[in-house]
Image 1 (cartoon, one colour):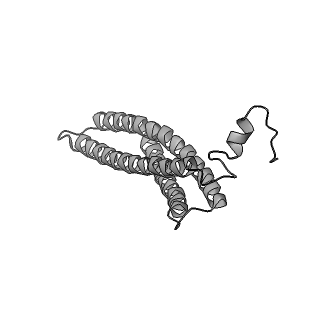
Image 2 (image 1 turned 180 degrees about the horizontal axis):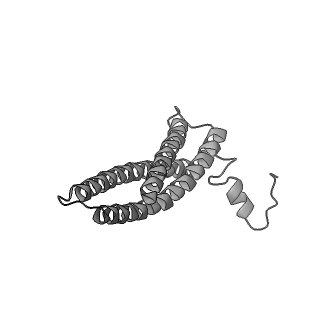
Image 3 (image 1 turned 90 degrees about the vertical axis):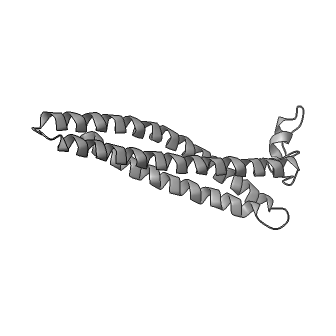
Length: 160
């Protein structure tokens, strides 16, 4: 039942990662909900937090695919074990199938929660881009900011 244990460990890790991602998104949303224009330093910090959230989201996506593959292996292991044992009434097989269906429902629930968090992340990213495009961060990453000035041909970078 090695695949079953691996699946459970990966599911717990994925749940923790989802929680970490939600915490990052909440931090970014707090910055964006400031009255008036957000502080440029706080906005830059939010951009970095969002980058970390994107990285975490990508790792979660890969882990989710591994988890789904492990559920399949778990099912095959459980079924083979149930078939190898004398079980005239098929009780072990039914129990194995019930366990796999329960785990599959758990994986689907987790996947839906992750999708919701990723949607929130994209929404927050859109808000940050809107603020930056309005030029609310003149010394940072928006229009006329560090990145744009650094990319302008013939200009010497003032910031180091």
